[in-house]
Image (cartoon, rainbow, N blue to C red; front, side):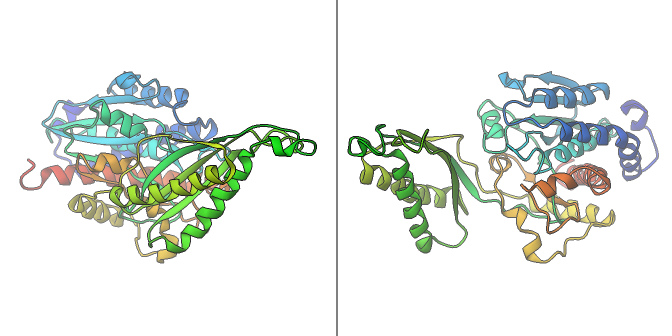
Length: 388
């Protein structure tokens, strides 16, 4: 059935959205499973971007590959209406963990919602847009797209993120991602240790300082990271060490103050050992999330109608405290970022056990439920007074 055909259909939009999502569900599930089986890291999602673009092109979307010059970003558009709906597709995986954050489900859900909305685009005066956004896991792909003008003018931006349980409102931390390195001087650790400058000791001092700082940190903050290079040989004073560190706070303003305090801990390591310190951002900071409350109410209504519940104990719904570059999008256009449950607690995001749950019956239901709920949310949101 084409968009033109459905423009004159007397069948309610809700029914057509349900029918269309279930009609294309095998293709959505196949896309999700293909992404899950072939994980790619941020900025390297070449297959994922192509496969996502191919599905959308097959359903009549006009697809721009390598969108805005980014090799693994895409934009797919259908309709020419006044009201612009943006659906976000994230498809990067985690190092060593694959799709342990369920980005394969996010992509399939957004594609499904967009295909369903295409059925009513003409009669609802919609332009439906899907954005394939690279490198959400620390690379800030959406931020880089924003800087080049992506998402501007959207009436509503949406995505649904898998989680152990359903949780409606995104409350992510603002976060900075830093690469930290020390450069000292190598020397024989037994014969000439006094001639060396130990870059690994600098890291030890910094981590002890951060550990002590935690007692004075306000609630709602996080500091965590890992050392990725500690030296080359046990009988050589480590000359170069490296690590990756994340600092999280409730808002960007809070983050700036906390970031400065954490950096002073790293400076302590350099001062104590004489090693040279370098701190460089891996991306621009991710923002806190600004939720469009009415859109979220509509999403919850439609999700409940599909049998979704939002009454899990708070300790099972902590995924909504993670960080996302969708927060930066929400500062520019109205947005929602609900979490859709796989019913797999205590398995949770960024665990191998969670990756295993991101394919299968529960994952497939999350794709179809999420696609239907997002599509119906967009239809109702635009139809409300002042938007039509």
